[in-house]
Length: 430
Ligand code: 4AD
Ligand code: MG
Image 1 (cartoon, rainbow, N blue to C red):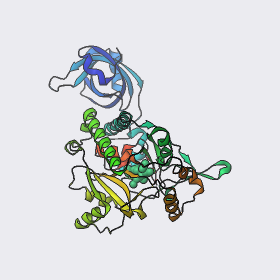
Image 2 (image 1 turned 60 degrees about the vertical axis):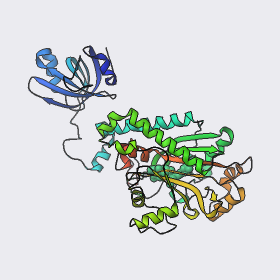
Image 3 (image 1 turned 180 degrees about the vertical axis):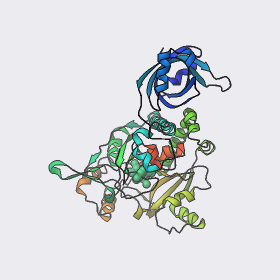
Image 4 (image 1 turned 120 degrees about the vertical axis):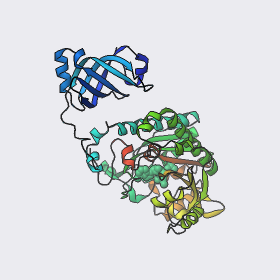
């Protein structure tokens, strides 16, 4: 019977067939040990010369690393390790003998591995990261679907910016001049709340920023959520619940993967609401007391984000930012019009900002004034301004950077490993 390795425990002592790849092997003369992967799991198959026809044994001896095979054998429980099985090979077909595998003979630098990303994806750690990414995506969908949000797909080709004009990728667009690759679907899903109340999008976004940090990609995946009649406080509540749900889901479903990644589980187990809240002004003070040279009114750098959460087991919402360093659409604090009702969520353990969000400006005139201050052209945003004239309501939303969140879950130092094919300033291939 043909099975997937994830189901192996159900077939103890039975004879099964597995189709996959040999990711490692060693020989002790009359026995060859094959480490096999089928995509769903891993197993050691033991090929014994005395139990195979001579011509089969000759074939087994030809197997190289990453050769593809179909192997039939008996499932044997490991004598000591619970839940571990081995396959006693009875028959084996070679699908293809792989040429010499370029990865793994010696230590490789990151550029070598990234040049071979199409092959590197098969390594066990990279396999584990993509499994966690899949869980994180599904957990986000699950939470939002269970909490009244529906998915609304935002366009990728747009006539305007969402997060600032200096970081846009332009593409020629027929007779209409330039289109820009979306930086965030937010403005579009804001339109959809007037139809559906609570909505989200989830897709690739693009930033032409010249940041070469371990937290920046030029193409990454974002989930933007937006909700009508939700104000700043409730916006943060939704975020802390959602993040706690995702962490709990990963801790429940991905222990095998987290173990491969040698992820310390203790910090993740502490992620429960409420998260810490502090204003930007308070964060600056705290950072200064910890030795940062940040000044009042300045944005937090990557090192500041790491420093700020150093002693905090839970993430920190930094809220009420100076309006001059945040986007035009953020609502001003009625108690202090110099700051906006926006919050960045900073993950612990040095994983940095994972969410940016805010209550939105609802007043037509104020919004126009903010856009003029930012020197944004009004005409392409007229549709967005319209939303403030037909049943405008208080509303809020936020955007999660998927790769930052996955990096945090996996304990991955650089987020380039959390996306299958990373795009960075100096990398467009493979
Ligand atoms: O903070 P940002 O720029 O917020 C927005 O785009 C809002 N329109 C979202 C909203 O309110 N709907 O981006 C959101 C998140 C950041 O917190 C970060 O996690 C991630 O996206 N992010 C990046 N991830 C990887 N590479 C980059 N260059 C990123 N820039 C932002
Ligand atoms: Mg941000």
